[in-house]
Length: 203
Image (cartoon, rainbow, N blue to C red; front, side, top):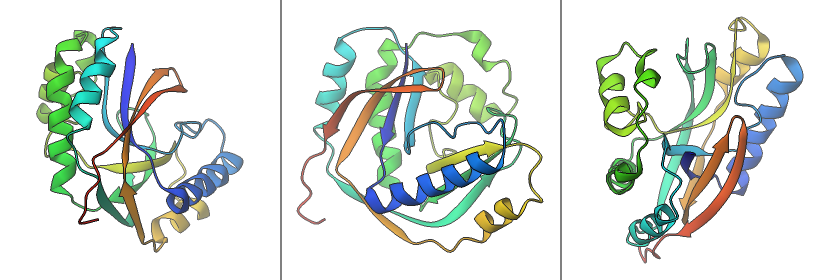
């Protein structure tokens, strides 16, 4: 069972992401990731279908305090190995809290991991390969670049839309009060549960 652990955007950021998803979807055919709900992935792996996963997640996440993230620039993953295209994203500013949270969650969920050696075949980067073999997800650790994805397009680097996206001046602040778990089947995302974070008096 493929499970995604996500941060979801607040209203203002969500509107912006959906605006770009619609724009790209309308303009180009065979665009990947467009139908996915707006989110930033903390962890995504094939986990054993076990009701204890939710219990473990609940106990882990309830110890995490709410926090803020900032998004100030667009980001392109050129020749994305996972999609075969150029993936358009909004970069989340460097935030050590995110790496700590990822570490906490992955450490607890690792016991449910259903290992599949064939998933590592496409990866040539040693960091990604090591992470994939150990955690079932190539982006665990300091090489992870937290982001919100718009979509992935092929052979459109010279398009007006692509250039406009790269030039977008953005400035978002997003309160993270929940972390959510989703079941993923192909492009279909089914919400399992949203877990509320501890209230942070400093926020």
